[in-house]
Amino acid sequence: MRIIRIASAKIDIDWNSVDWSKNTREIARSLNVSEGTVWNYRRLYAPDTIKKLNFDWGDVDWSKTNQEISLEFGIADVSGARRLHAPQTVDHGFDYSQINWSKSNRQISQETGLSPFTIAGKRRLLAPKTIKSIFPSGIDWTSVDWSQRSVDLAEELGVSSSVVSYQRGLNAPETLQPPTTPPIWDWASVDWGKTNEEIAQEIGATLYPHDKPNRNYWMGVLQRRVGITRRRYSPDNLGMQGGVGNEKINWEPVDWTKTDEQIANEERTSARNVRQMRLYWRRKLSPT
Image (cartoon, rainbow, N blue to C red):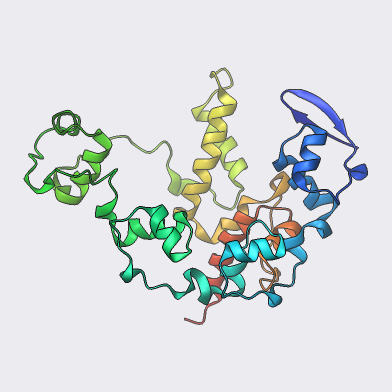
């Protein structure tokens, strides 16, 4: 019997007695918990019922779109499997130089069969000047008086200050003000051999005393900042982020031929954490 906390109320759920043959949404509704909670416990109690963990991806025709494969096999998300098992088919080798970027993402998506999210990402890379939110029509940014403040220019041009700041970085980067806020901590002095939580607890003892209002919230923010800063100061210790219960994971013996979801289930960590470590070990073990 495990006890979980939901909406500040303790609810006893015997997860061994759950009918895992039902889908996650049905179980979540019957138990009055979130789908994320059910998914986490499914990984612990019934990983064999997670279709994409046990699916033979060798049978998939990767020339089809992700949506077609999802409908054919009843798997919600196949994008991660495509990147792992058939990376050469990502975007289906589409020639983006042929796209008319004056059209909307939805129109291009309907014409090409690619998702609007994919089109939006490629637009930012290949045709940023067609993004109306940051390139509003009718403004000649080369003739703007960049000696003025962004907030004043925004009022004068009738756009948001964030748009002006973005355009300032493109057209007049020399007028950008350097950051004046000092870092919250001397990150170079941190012992990155410890987990993110341990580092956050040590720093938080100084920055956020126990009588500080909303201390738990600020400690959570601090722990996330430690994780982001670790990538810059100690990428070799990314594995110290740990998994469930902040356990330290030894990534050396991990079988990287398995999918992210399978490794995450075995190591009891998130698939996102596994993806980060896969990229790190790929670079580390590369002969080049």
